[in-house]
Length: 453
Image (cartoon, rainbow, N blue to C red; front, side, top):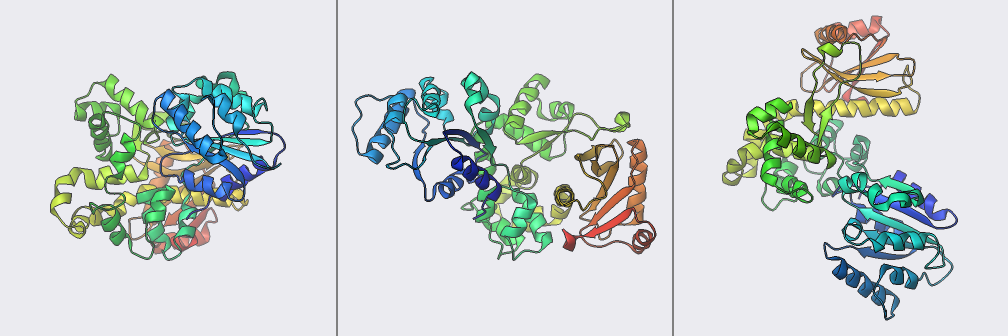
């Protein structure tokens, strides 16, 4: 199991502080929030309740029953104030109170937050307590929680988001894999820890895809649409939009022409997908060449959703009529390298960020991004506070990164009105002889092959 050391350390620091703490802990479905909570609670006194999708009355009854069972008592009144008044640690140690999927309570019962704030203020259980409100609804926590809590948000000590894991976490988790295989696994799964934990790095990429994704009993077989449907309704509309995006229709006007939905309708549903972190708007790094940049471009943000709608969804009929291996060899294998270009850029960006953290770059990166032009793209632009730039060029699918590719990059930089004294050139395979010679002569060119990532 992948361990989130940074977030766990933060939780332990909060636990060790004097007084009471109120923590919001959240992340998308599949972030293994529950495993994280179990690890944090190990060796501590705690009360854990998993909220149901239930009415306010039923929810209150369920929590009351669990209070009675754990503390071997009878409640005369079922209310959140009474519940938090009766919890106990049994000694002087701090009690951890976890309400998981708390949004199911907060949406329907105003008393819940009032009781939580009373507990934090020591007006109920008198001992030290750490209250953890956990959720797998990113959209609700980020868009609605503050309005629900109002001034109570000032009482929250920390908000911790269990983000998707980084590429380096995948490398550490899959010691049997080469860097190349890790890039492929990352491009398919993203940093979703529950997906990563089901992937067998003792088997090759093809075998894992066939077993986990293309087989009807595979863990990820219906996961893309299940994940989308966990919070969003009207899947027919969302699937149509996602299929169009995966097919390369990345502007609202293109989606309007392809889907037949009105522009207003598309905008609303795209907003919902963005709030759920399924899609994102691609914003070019701000340069002087704004007139040469593409605007209003969208892409599927979730790696696995993107993979499903790119390779599987368009050929769903054949998925049921072919063997998994036949499907892979027909529809996935031939185009997988081209598909991975985008994710190789992400990996290279992360590599630069790691170098930046240990001051191994010629500039101190303040911000970084990409530039999407009308006639060419710049894979990576990193900039310091003085607006000195570092440019990255990433080659995954071509046999070599060539000097001609660099010349094309230089031309694109002119259109972006961008200059740089530093170039990091990444290649998954090799570099041509001309570029190798140029790099010896020109110290601005840094060549990075796959083995260095």
